[in-house]
Length: 332
Image 1: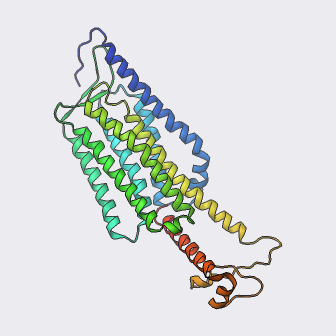
Image 2: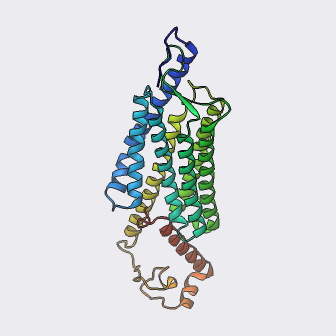
Image 3: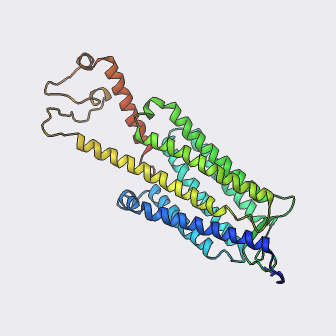
């Protein structure tokens, strides 16, 4: 890339470049801080568990994002912006794959949803490839007179990078919609399923935070000032990865704590309760028995009433949904 002749320093360009550097550094610090904060849970719920697609994807997302954001902040004067674009594309696609694998685990029996997820991945990869592969933008290593920084911009009248953030926003809205629809379809069971509550809540929070970050980036690129375009890109990379990784950590933490609580409550010293071994029918495994065995559905209804049976069915259904939502063989 040819360098522009130096001269008197452009103060406005210098201030914008300084703000960009500070934002990139802040984004890198955010990722490192979150990594340190969650490292004990990462070891407990990922490193010490069996290998799966979800584990590999989580570790790749976590460590690639940290390396990319730190490297992006450290070498932001790199005169070859294509290297940054490639890393940005990989980071965004990785983050969305994490969320799409979660939805695949929730909707795994629905071919329409699986088709939607596949189309989202293909659309995103194709769009990013076309946008970054078409030389309609420009890259500078001197954003202003005497101000050296890696600066990208769109050719006037051809806002290609704006479409990049538009595709990301469409993907985010689609993923949130699928999560909320799944939660609404099983809203009674959701209230009794810790995993679905966590998944729905975190998905909504993730979308609300990331929507404004991506929208801010899109507005900045619509304005298209070369020395200012990269102002919020670091936060788009870091915050999306932080929330996606926290979503996976919180899901595993909720699941394994629930499993541990179930094991410890299965037997209590001094209690006369005993539990039947697992049987094929759900009606004979939903309730513990006392020393007097309850062997028929009529006896069960007499003891606990119709409301209790309905409560047990909902609890059983919530458990099934929870096990479907968290499935290490699927990847998580």
